[in-house]
Amino acid sequence: MLHQANFTDLPDHIILEIFMYLNVKELLRLVRVCKRLERLIPDKWLWKNVQFSPRPIQKTKLRSIVTKYFTNSTAAVDICGKWKNKNTTYAISNHILKTIAVKSPKLSTFKIEDENLNSISLELLPSSIQHLSFTRCEIPLSCLKSCVEKFKHLKSLSFRRCPCLTDTHLSCFGNLPKLEKLEIVESYRIDNDAVRVIGRSFPNLRNLTLVGCARCGDLCCGNIVEKLPLLQSLEIEEWTELSMRGVNMLTNNLENLKFLSVKCTQINKGNIVIRGSRVGL
Image (tube, rainbow, N blue to C red):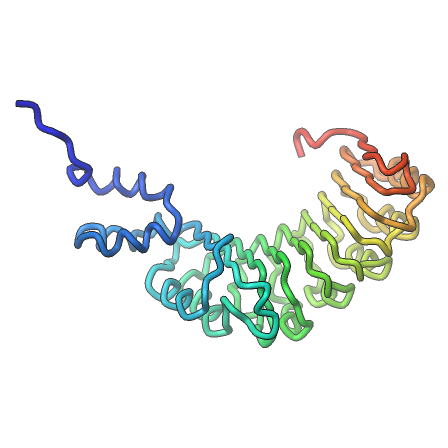
């Protein structure tokens, strides 16, 4: 009689391979199934890339997970708060950031969404961070006040729909010689002063996205040409003060530029102007 295979007959390493496709919520449910799974779930490979978003997680639950499951191998974490909870932090705390730094000192990617960072000190994150991303976050200057020398290994920095973002926020990071990619989307306070900071502090940028920065225009193009000679990819949208003079300034003077995307109402009747290709970037 043929033996009927059962999931529990699989060796541990095969089960772990399967579990790597599960999200955090599903993994935590499995802990309660049996002693064997309770033993397997904390395996470091299941907690290498930890994604909580798009589901919000409360700080009490997050603190418990970080303490119990984060390891020296944890490389990336994506945390989601609650945007409607505007007056206080929902998902993270300084204590949680300290615990992450202790448990996962090699963390390379930190993403935070829908969170108010009031009273949070981002300097508590490990200095190993290479990719930092904020989406729909309230970012007071106080949370960045001691970050000037903190993120020297940063390669990419992203702000998406963070309306409070200004040139002063960008200045808080200090000089980032390794930063290659900067993305700013729908931050209406970004202007020529901010572009000056970008050119001065992030001189080795290869990829720059400035979308929904209505105060930007031809002056910004001049600063980009002067300060960012290594730029290979540039995406521009909704710059109200941009003209073809600025576009031509970019295309004629950025020798390394391989891809340029421009979408502004006053240029080409609002249709996207694309030059070059992203292929290979």
